[in-house]
Image (cartoon, rainbow, N blue to C red; front, side):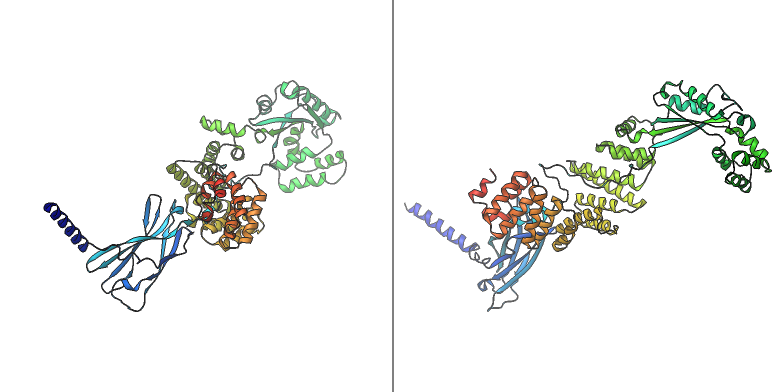
Length: 596
């Protein structure tokens, strides 16, 4: 019994000595009672969070040789971001009559997942060579990330992937889709018989083989006579030659369905004037003498007599008149490649097979690029265009292809490679010629990369290149610029830009967001309502109305609009569950029923 009592006594003495020598961890438990954060709900501004640690330290703890250190940190998820060290009291300045006032500003970067975190203050007291830990205090819960709702082409899992960027296009509506080909078939002097039994080689080739990408739509034969006596002897010779040529052409099966139009000219200088203009055998002044005769409005025979008196007549008679013993055969060809819906596929197929594109013009490839429905086809065509017809259009459009491929890429490494390719193409386009379109696209690529500062510079430059304030491109570009203003924290400026933007559901939502962030709830509500009216399937407008209702304390309107928002968007449903704006309602059964 005595042994047992002795053991208990020794144990009690050991425990007493231990507590006497150990730091009294609870003696500073009220140290942080007067410390708080302002604002209590942290708010994202630009890409960081700014908060002030304010309050006072109790006078009782402020003794000489005592040092008090604060270690603020933001705890979220399974980790924490340490925010440095503050020393509000270092023991050297002791004022025994007042408390130490605190007003320290902390700025830390926003990281994904911080929305549900909390800002805590950990403290440590140093006194007489010993260190005492103080129970941590939570001074702020949650992070308001409303600016991140700005729509800039982001992808959310349950919504269609938005296309990014603007292709430069060529207007083919007024393009000359028809071309003419003309041939002269020589005839025997004074007769309606061709000089040769076979047609000229080039004419025969066109009829038999055609031209790739062209279709014969019209054929016309025009019989001619020369101002030579043998040809002039038969007044019907031009008509007979036209008939003879038509008969020959009708032997070709592919021309029969088309039909052959006929015409003839006699006692007419039209064809002679064309040949004289190209003739190099006499001077311009000498040619003028013939033109003056033709224009003197006398009859054909009188004009011919005057020409015979000119000193150059013999040369003209020898070199030009024989060419008028002929029939002109004219073809109208249609460029079927611009009306062929398969042109894009055929160009891509040739590229894929490594075959020549010699028969395609620059316009054909541009047309094919515009009509191609798939990104990989556009990539192949525009890549070829940059090689053989480099221009701001080809580089810009290839960049837009890379941009949209990046938008659809899940692998982060591959996505960044595609974004870099897109940026390179837009810069190459700007080296050739700086355009508002390529500057806008450069900004879009930088947004996708998360480089908002440089993106804003590029988007602003795109606006500066447009002079017309009502230009549709400028208005569209200002919508993107306004969304960037929200991200950059310039909310009032964002409202100005977005008031100029096209009134679609995205711009109207962003405008409402900008007004909400300037605390103009009435204007925000109007803009959100307009967004809903434009597109009732766009859940963001309803979400904006729910945010306004939460700030106004309108519980019924909050639940009504939030329900509509989460029905339309899984992304908004996930956000609403933890959005700090709705924290006052998140234990309400009616609120919870929205998510069932």
